[in-house]
Image 1 (spheres, one colour):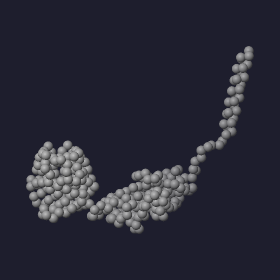
Image 2 (cartoon, rainbow, N blue to C red):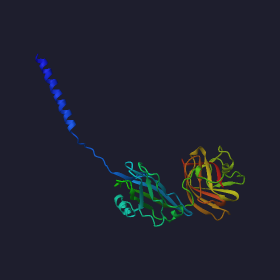
Image 3 (cartoon, rainbow, N blue to C red):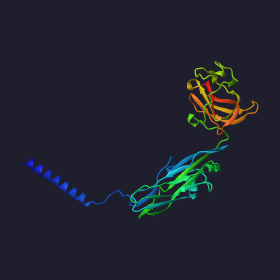
Image 4 (tube, one colour):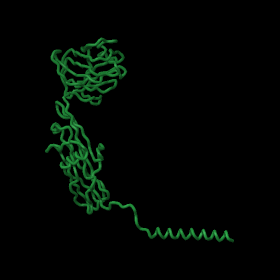
Length: 332
């Protein structure tokens, strides 16, 4: 009888505890998480991560014949919730933010020169009931103005300047600015940096019957004639050393737009070489040092086609302590 009473007491206790707990839960109405009830307009997008900012990074090369590179971006604008009515978002450049950015990030970026920027679309529109704009903010520097960039790095802050419509909508306090970072490199070389096959223009010259070559190093096997026989199984090679390879085309060829060199096994090619040309074998034009990408076929491309009878490669860098070349071709 006593055990039965104890069981009833335990059951009654747990039932009472359950009732108290449920009652407490019903009475409790507080929450420990609160959200932003304001609809915020913001910019989201980048092609790089720079100190946590919305950033786009671009690289420009200023060469002796002009500037190469692209500064062009199109950005939609977003809202944290569907907008209550059609919303127009306007943007503006704020160069006062350059100094603030530099101070916060220990950089020394410059503001873009006046008149260089093209804001072809300085506003974007979010339709009623939507969270993303139907068009985009468009920022670009025209190609013909890239050569005006002479500093090492520029910073362009573009911010949401104003909004119209969309009742109750406000500008984001931490995602309302996008930064464009433009790095500029000045090159005195007249050669592209490490081009590949897809960068080459023109067609390979098929007739190499008149072409001959000389090398100013003793060869361990083969001869320069192997460069023009159309057989990649024949080659000449020599121990690595600074050397000059001179090719005589037999006559002046106009409009040379590139050089292709094939090396044996794809691992005994060149890495750097100064490129020169001449029409008489006496006076040479220096195009600078070519940085040459690895592979079985290696390429050199001038920014501007040239005319030459003689082409000289002053080889200063090579792969695997050996130079073994099989074919030499020109694009025209």
